[in-house]
Structure formats: structure tokens, C-alpha cells
Length: 342
Image (cartoon, rainbow, N blue to C red; front, side, top):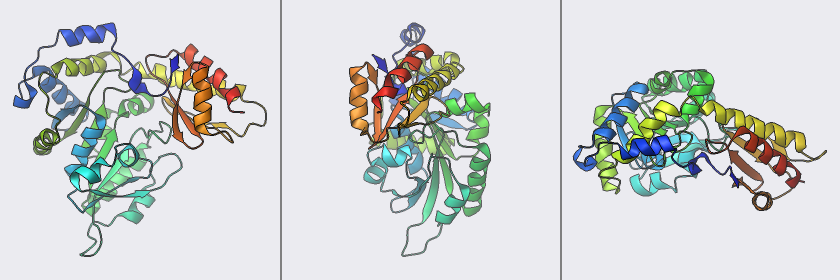
């Protein structure tokens, strides 16, 4: 089986497992786990922020991050395909009373003019006021697309001038950093809070870190506990994340190359006249528009041939490369998929 459903399907490497078993631990609810403290401080420094908070999931980190800026009845603006809007089970509204308005883009890349058109920081007594703008880099459902730095800077300035907070869902920010060479702190400086994930391309079994000011992280820690997210000797998990920082960031380039190999092979093998379309990957995610064949049918056909894909739309499947898949395997998967598209 070549599993391309997500980069979350990775398992710890031997080196990562060794680091986990050797980690010094303590009770993190009491703030006594030294490995967690090291991960939080190191991640915050990388992103140019004051403090960090280790969370079990990226969804929890995003809920906590947005909640630092948006109160009940206020709104966060984001892309219609953003993870916080489509893949977090409505947690922001259900748990913190946040409302949401969205803009629409074809590939997730933000248009500053579109954001400006929606901003309503002081909507008065009858409408909902904008308290935060949330962006995603890279954009998952957009196909692993990288937000242009100039666009991020423009939105950041726009929000600052309007007195609106900025949150970055940077689950795969590492991928954008590897491709563009833009320093992580340069990205981080454009936002009030940033979440980054270690259990996707970096291959850790569990964990994301939210960064921001020390005051924000203290408040987020309380909300994390209230939501059931306090944990004890989780330094075992933090050690995996630290190992990933040391060994798995630069190798993301291998995943990007594998995604390109998959996309190229699939295009070359597409039947003549097929209405299917394979998008050009920006990082490690390839979106395939299945043409006239329902996506669930394509995914079932692929699974029968030993290729696992995700269905992300009525006629859209997604392939995600990761450290568990070689470029040769990805290329073979593309060759197998193409004829199944009709």
C-alpha cells in the first residue's frame, strides 16, 4: 500500500523513538516538564514570539489562538476553504462563541483587496465586528499552496491599521519555509499568534505549538485545561517534536520532489482527451480533479490498486507525500492513478 491520504500517517523513525524514550519528563499541568518547556521556548524563538504552548492537535492550537483575539459574538475572517472553517468540526463557534465570515479563492492564496472588502472592525450595535483575520500557510485544501510574502505583508499591515488581530494557521509553515527560504521569524512577525504542527510533514506522532505573547499563552493554557487539553508527562511527545526540528525540516524538500514526481507521472499517463486535471503542487500536496468520475469512485479504484487517497470534493481527490513514501513510489502511484480517471 502506498498511503497518500495525508502526511499525518507517518510513524516515528528509530531515531525519533530513541529520543522519546530518553526524554526527561515532569507534570506539565504543574508546568514541570522540562522537555515541553524546551519545545515551547524553541518554537517561540524560531517564530520570533515570546512564548509557546504545546497542544495535542493543530485544531486545538487554532481554537486557542483565535480565542485570544475573538470574543463571543465577534468574527474571524478567513478563506472559505481554510482548515479552521472546514476541518475543525465547527469548534470555534461551538466552544468559544466565535462567528466566521469567509472569502473565496480558487487555490487558497489570499487577495488583500478581498480581505479589505470584508473588514468591519467597528460594525456598530446591529452587525458583527471583525476582531481577527486568520490565514493559512501552506493552504491545505488549496493544494499545499504557499502564500506570497508580499500578500501576507499587505494583509498584516491592513489589519494593524484597522486594529484587527492576525492569526496564522501554520500547520505546514515548515514546507513554505523550505521552498521559499523565507525565515520562520519573518513569517511569525506578521501575526499576533501562530500555530505550527509537528505531526504532519515533520513526522512526529502528536503535537502542535501555539506561539504568541507570554500573556496570551498564559490565558491559552487556562482555556486548554478547561477544554480537557491539560496533559502530564507529555515530554515524551515533545521530544519527538524536538527531534523533528533537528532532523526533518530540510528533508521536506524530498516530499516536494515526490509530489512533483506523482503529478508529472499522472499527467503523462492520463488518457488522451481525459477531462481530469492534475494540479501543479506547490509543496507536498497534489490536488486531482477527477473530471466526470466521482471522487469516491476514483478513490475506491485506487485503493483496489494499492494507492490510498483522500476525497476532498465531489470530483476532487488529494495525494500528500511524506517521509513514508519515496519519490519512486509516488511516481508509480501517479502512473497507476491516471488510467483510473477515465
